Length: 338
Image 1 (cartoon, rainbow, N blue to C red):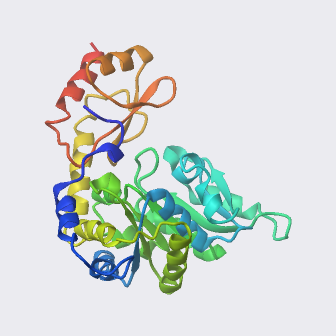
Image 2: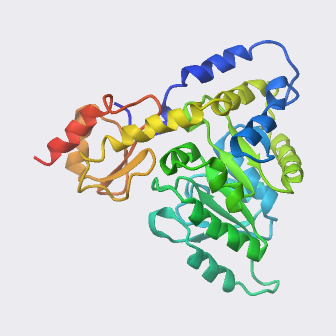
């Protein structure tokens, strides 16, 4: 019973079938027929003209996006527990050639407009301080909370007011949208997002994510991102296999269907974890208070998960699970209360 991460899950059958269907000769790099369909597929999904590129990894997607929005002397306002701060080994600074991450606190790993405004007002308009050039948020957050369309729009309004680029790390974007029940455009371009890192691997993909560009600068930024992708050694010679996976996700409802399954599995654990939850469950992650002895007891029963500090654990469900498949963990959590 693995609850380590949705990165560790199997590839869903539809994605595997799409890879097999792409397994014949075509043009190399991104000149193939599958890559050519990405713009149209993502434009249809988001209800606006968009430009999309396949990208090897989520870290590369986030970092290349920020390199398109922030110069080396600039700063990116983000949460102090964001993936780009804690889990990407300085990749944003590497790709931007030195841009600073302006990390802020916030409940549930969310940025608040007030905190962002306060930080922006504290920056002097002279050459001695790093100027903010972008905002980056994570959807869903590192604690599994979803930004509502209104919350994203409030930050988007600040980005416009201060002339900042606006990036969204959507490693679990599908889980957030599945929870919110909104149109994907409502929490992206309509709310001011310029570039979205659209997660596929955590949602049943094998390899590769997508970068989606919105707005009147989408073409120019995507062209710049394509240069970064090549320069970083991430322009796969057989890119059709990455494009085929992204298309399998978004040309039907697979991206939402998989996310709904993962979210439902997480919700099925809520009652068993009652009284232990550190945050509301809005996506496919649960943060549960457990003593060292309780964690040892659960692991002895075959449940795998990551510790979260000295007295808690993170449990992550995935597309291949449902309420029945997680019932043993629910029973085990309930038994801890006895």
